[in-house]
Length: 591
Picture 1: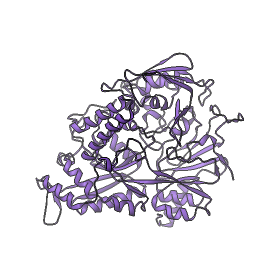
Picture 2: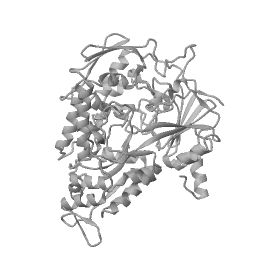
Picture 3: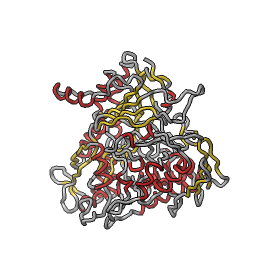
């Protein structure tokens, strides 16, 4: 699952700009006024796309600040800890979990939070077939795709049940944010003139911030579109320290929209930001200035995230009968030999050394190397070391050919070229796209790169399906592989390379599922059904072998993750899983 529960962000040198442009840009992106004394200012490359958590598809959001789940993961150990719950009991067969809420919980508007809110959140939102949320995918159980049942026992206790054993159940039963029934139930139970749930347009970015209700450490205070979100501490939040003092201690979080990583670096070096993701090309400079800048760079180890190139394998047509992908190009993309040739033609070692400064390693699996379920090359994972001659051989054997100019043609003499989408403003992605362009030119393929704003980029991938290839990635967050089932389920919301009809959409014609796609889906289901760890490793190992063979995602590089945090922020307990702010509730500002 692509998790948004915790405020760990995955944000990714310095260019010379004309003075007039620089002055204009920085005035538009200047952080909030300094009168927020007890505040942390953090950058984000993208504005909020919605304030409705289940409908969010962006990796960049404030939901980790404004919501808690019943159960949370420790950011260092990954162990489960109480969130809104005070305790939980699991039956011997693992099919029932009874979760007990803390007493006296309240929403950010002061209303009581009870078991009714938990039942509402699951039964009427997360498990509602009329609401297009990817979280439903990870809650499906077994081959039938059955969903758990959730029922209230009393005001503090809720019972979750599954029809069969489901190994990741407790993490997913307890990990999703609880949503306010009193604020949302009317929108879920009523429809507009088109017969669509009013909930689907509820809490957009045009909603007054005082109407957004949460249960987390912070609540929305000010939203200035495309500039910043200011959050204030939630006066009704449940946490207290051992002396009975309310937490969090920090009054405000300023979420500053700075799309370009060069400008994030400018703002951080000038002292206007308290935290930022350290991209590889920034590392030498920021490391030298660590003492002078009064900040610390933390090493989070290999990132649990992934980066990849993916081709649009969707052979369907939209409601007007137009194919999502040009049928000529679709034949290329759906040819396994073509995808493998691309994988051999991309020089990951050069990418690691030149773009990531050697701070990483080539990536070949969607499962993080830190997970016990990761299949290593030594244990059978197929890898694609740089070999352009092997790439050409695969293409020629698949019926492609070269003209006298060295350009690759298909069997019908169509020149092979495609457009590669990526999100704008991220220097590493731009450098990766440049290298991919150069590498594939060496085997006669022309790549046209198109950089879009993040939200536009996501809309193209997930809604219109109007794309040929994209350079992207998924954020990580847990060593449990079933969190990725919303990617690998053939009906999954994040099954971007061949996405079928989603709830609320008009049906698409001619959608086909490849046999290998279904095999990966089935293996993830089987791995979730057994409690034996070794058996689960076996199933996930088989899935990784198929993924590496079929290449729906051609993985790039697994870099080390670095984060710079001002020393004025006290109490950091940096964890590879949770980053620097997983324990935000106990952090303090010391100037």
